[in-house]
Length: 390
Ligand SMILES: Cc1ncc(COP(=O)(O)O)c(C=O)c1O
Image (cartoon, rainbow, N blue to C red; front, side):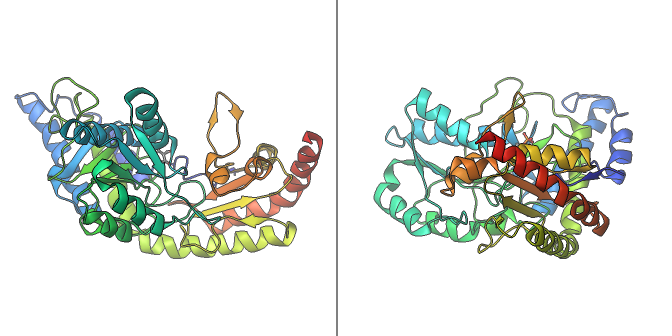
């Protein structure tokens, strides 16, 4: 049986969600229509909104449905920037980090190159821990120029968890909007929007066992943003387009289940990760385990193998029935060194030799057995590929 250990890329749909989603897809009606079909779809959508609000600790009116994490990140970063900048032309600075997901980083970079924004990337140490003293300093010195802060809750690649509450405490005094991409965190560590002090938070369904193509931006009621998509005025006028009620309903169930079993899964994933790390270390004592000295996600294990090609390792594990990831984005089949690993101060050789294993809702001890069985041979092969590359 092939083993799937790439839940941070996408997680298999939960059996309960599949049944629920298939049934929901039978519902016809645009949620904006006045007739009874439309009203039934509206009810499905609003029930999904309520369930998500209860699961992530926000008000139902604060849930804006989108097509996923990428859209939510773009809406938050561009929308908050445009809003703040329109109110005060001096506000051109975006405070973020260079280890953010591309959905945030590229939105920020676009605002810089096309819209005259400026970015400040908060430094990190070699474990990916953000320099909060530097964040404080930039807030103190440039608060009247900052349009927004965007810092992810947990890193999807290396698994480091950032102290979001501390970060929002630092920004609170300056009344600057603060967004966090909570995709890697939700369902894997406790996440509560109201308690977090955030102004906006990105979530997506497919990392937790819902269909792909649905997500949400949680936006505090007090916060305003300029929409990216214009049209029929759905979702508080912030995200036009006919909402996908069935997908929203499926995502709501997946999030409810994930949050409900989060504490249990955290325990299981910690045990699986510990076994996997010690098994890999026996075979490859030279391996670096990323963010080892930092608070980290228990479902994420991220290694750097100096002199070894991550792509070869991935391929050799895959042909032996174990699907893992290098962790870095790969566009059009061409892989490049991980921007996240580079931002930790690693060289490009190290950033090409990465391996990420992420557990999810259906991971078992048997998955780790299969991994540890396939790993030694795959590692030997990948080391040879690394040598020939030099
Ligand atoms: C941290 C993070 N942000 C954003 C995204 C993009 O989300 P989506 O695939 O729903 O567009 C992902 C998914 O890869 C992610 O891991």
